[in-house]
Image (cartoon, rainbow, N blue to C red; front, top):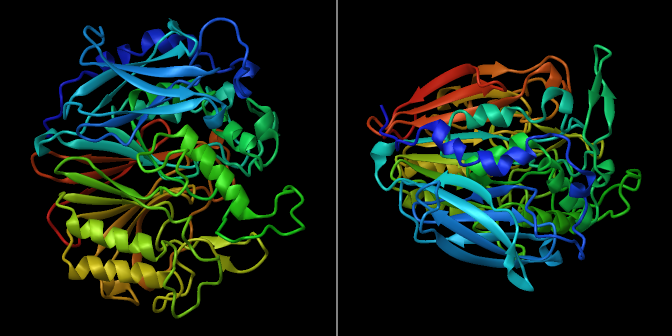
Length: 531
């Protein structure tokens, strides 16, 4: 059994009761969907909750949004009473970042529960502060016997399925919170900037699906204000806000933070009249800006757009998490049949970084958080061409196109004898487990490995993707609908759990449904190059 810190779950959550009780109602004032006014009476408010991200053994990032210009202040304590708190002076929140801000906490004790509260003070009168908003998180343990438990999923508010008050909103976040994870990996598609949300939709059984709506979600996002409004929309959900205040996140992005299946240099067809801005690079810059404002990422800040999403998060002796960006550096989507492809889906620089960091890692397990699967065929019919959106292009033979870059990486892992690699992803809106085996593959110069898929969080569910045999995947488990775009009311919403035992080092993966029911379990042994 793992020797996890003794922080009973009810006690951990009790710190949140006071600050979040007022936001428990799902339907929030419409003013929350709009940009803050500059002349508001009263004190600054943080009605979008708090978040923490990229937590390590001695540091973490705390995020907040104000309803007006304000100074961000963070106080931390070892207890809920906040006796003798440590104070951190944060940034001045203003219109340049849509009144969002992040404060980095340093010098924290390893393996401890940190209680924090965020205060917003009037820039002209620091004595005038708003109601504090509280949260909690655990720092990464310094020793391995504590074990590690985390969750992953992706794809939120897609295909027009938004916050439905009849269903209780994004209920999956409450099921995830009950597992008391150390952190949560969101594998991309945190928003659907290209997916407007209407007030109602008719379900196949004739009943009506209702959405909470905002102005920014009434059309595809093109302006910076519209991208920002997409991120604010999800924060109208009380379940998500409670989860954010309890569980730190590791965030990556994929296509829908900008536009379906986008790639650098793409120009939107004139026939797509939803967009007046046809340059995807322009849209991506605006989407990236809003993304950097609304999530606490250690390598990406609003004032540094040359920074990056890909990074490695050290989670103690048992685990390193390698967060990939399979969107920013990719080549154009194509049929994927080229015999040379140095750019691939990662770009040369990111691939070199990943090789270097994998070879340096001394963690028992190296989780590769990918925003797209490797052996599942994901087509791109955006322009009416038989293009490929992910890696696999459907040809079961030798590596071609973007498969060449993945083959290079898998060969590197084998020849460097790097142990404990596990791939986690989302994107395809169903859950499955694939085992990759050279004896089944056209390309054989790699060691066996597992890839686990989970999602969506709250989006349309789709049938299982077909497999490409280049790397020899075998689908050991899958749960997916037979129809396309099944609403969350029809089920098929999923998340995954990874539990690493501190004593044995065993890694257990559980694929779970929306209510937390376990669908599939796989136990992996430590210290092996492949299994």
